[in-house]
Image (spheres, helix red, strand yellow):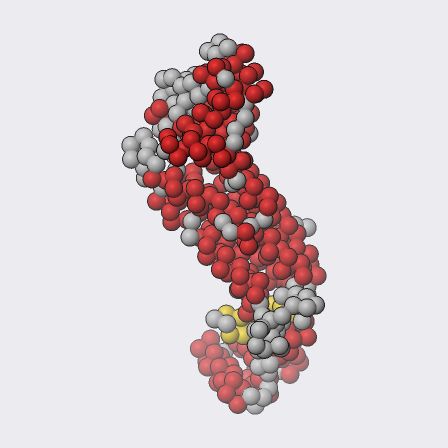
Length: 431
């Protein structure tokens, strides 16, 4: 987690101050519940809320001696609360605090990421609707295939990010669990009603079955979803990077006044933002394998997962937040060149209509094999020598006999490509 790729709201979730504040709330709410159950004095619960405080520097100082972060926190808390602090953490174990805290942090991070996705979805929808009927060439294997529209392209990305939003909602629900079950998760030293109370206060659900730790399959799923979202970020970023290539120049990142593209070549307008997004996506995905490997802990618990999560929790969420924010800005300001799109579409002399001619010949009675051979022969001549695909077709007597000139007009009409655009948009965006 570095400042260059961090936004303040997300980074704040992972600050020491925020972490220890959550620890304090977990302990204070747990003591409230114990007081309500008659297991601790109400005066002790009040004392914790009224006098409870901590200092990050002091906790670090104590931990340097104790080599235990939760004990260091509790010791510092007791320095402020006084004798009543002896009722804090009764029946609990460190994982109750650590795992519940991580659940709070990841749910708060999820809320920011969901808002990021909402902004990106809004930008994609607006740009897709703006270019709903802006013709461009569709490509397979990076080679001209058939016409599509730029709006249809963006609608596909919208649909993908809408799926990602649903995945993240589900991952948020799965990660939002609270464990206050004591050593090896048996509740032998603490009433399960304490866990229920803490969960309610923190907006979590009680963990179905904790083994002193919350099972890490939940976390694996969460980080896997972040990895999928990051891959979708990269897919859109790569599309924009390709479209900005000099040979295409169909769309490009906004280039602001005073911006410089190269230290050596003043003419350069490089896709630096989307290239950056490709790199950031790689970093988010790098958290997935460690999260999967965290699932298999020894017996009821070990701490092999701990060092991993202290890094991937902040790094993956902060990086993805920054990436989604940046991508939304790229889409909002994306510069589109419809004339270049049309020029590229027409650059192969009509070859992009080859399927329509193939299908027409089969409809006229020609075998598919013969029709394919004739259309391909005409297409390869144009591919290699240039010229008009339609003219090449008309020079073949059999094709000319089977497909009249008026019918070729229809087959080469790009409006044919637009007939079901409304259907696609209704599926993606609703009516």
